[in-house]
Length: 185
Image (tube, rainbow, N blue to C red; front, side, top):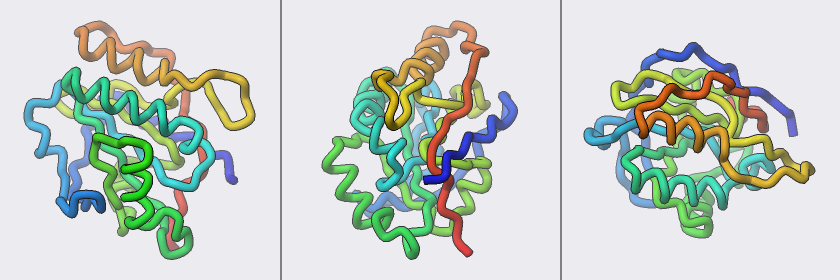
């Protein structure tokens, strides 16, 4: 597993739009599908990464909680499924069902969306405000495979709570750390 940090793009960056399929529903999803969202969480994840496997139960819980609070939560898998079949759309359906993802889990087969977001690793998290301006990018929390740190999502939760309450977003934003995105070619 190649340990890769997120790139920490500039705050204020506008969320690139996309139209991607959700293998679980067969529907195509875009940011415009969430016109009443108070903010947008975009998470680049996959099925096989140990960093994602460690947090996926808590991220599923985060998705349920914060969708109910008015955030649009969207996960995207951009890995090369030809070379990493455990990240195929069929396996994505299985993971979404097994771990209770109530949010869209989209497949970025061309990897164009991951490149537009400058995503580097799984997991890689972005929080945008209602105007689709980036207010947080970085880690879910301090937990890593092999550590004894509990998975809580405290960093992303603190940013999401601040956004929803109209408070300043914490400026101490640490890069996410995970497996590199499995690029094609």
